[in-house]
Image (cartoon, rainbow, N blue to C red; front, side):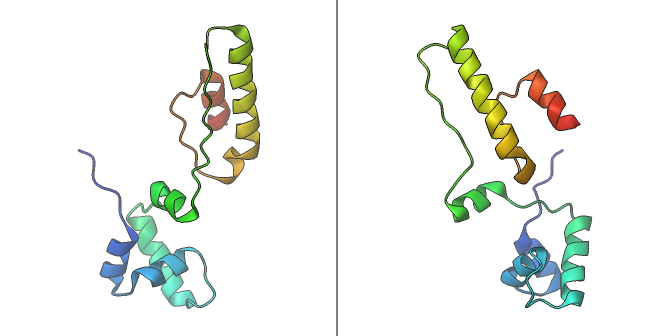
Length: 114
């Protein structure tokens, strides 16, 4: 049975602090004391908190998604073009952010596991 992901609202409620304090603590904001920061990070770890990527993308106004429309994928030229786009994206984006790829090739999947 899959449980729903922990939110910063739940962390805030458990600790009796505001959602913005939890967010700032998780981002090491200098206005948050070390004790509070430690408590927030400890509880976040215990609850397996992971940031909601959809919310982050909405807030920042970008999704790091590349859309490509091709007339036909079976032609070698277009397959090569998609491969080149993927390679460039992995080099530029993967090291710096979370990535959700709907159709990941076996080669890329093995590269991510390294």
